[in-house]
View 1 (cartoon, rainbow, N blue to C red):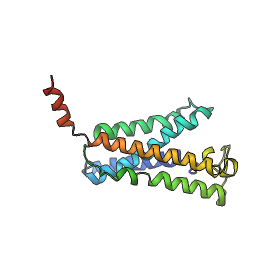
View 2 (cartoon, helix red, strand yellow):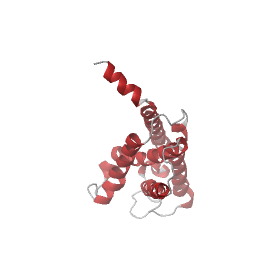
View 3 (spheres, rainbow, N blue to C red):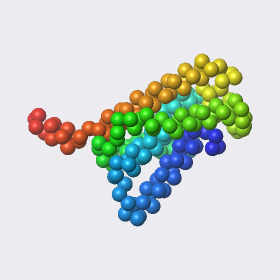
View 4 (cartoon, rainbow, N blue to C red):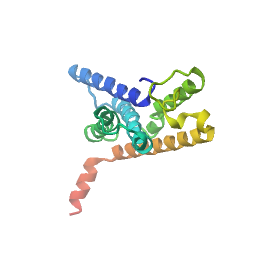
Length: 183
């Protein structure tokens, strides 16, 4: 099961959440710029699970309404995004952060292709095994197809990353006081 990005990203969120609970119990400040920039990378990693599943895989899923499916693909990603948007301090990211946030999905894409093309570890119940996802299956669909999907996912991921960074760059105190003055 660790061959799926969904499992890896949910495991990452789980480990990160355990660390946050541990850090809070030790009085560690979880609102430092460094920590929030790492947390945003984790948030983006789990959000790609939600977005790719919703737009590319859910139409193919027979088990859409199963609890574990909803938890892994929707509830955990959206909860973590809301936590990042609501709880985390504003104006903590650097302009290039969305670029480095792409590292984990890009590494997974490379891993998925290397496994499917060379290592060939079978993936139980995957229709395109040894590829975890249909859009990585080079022998079946060709490089143009795979690279097109990869490019679209990468660009969408970057756009979403810059949107998150943009939303978190807004000075809420100024924005809220501006709204009060304009009445």
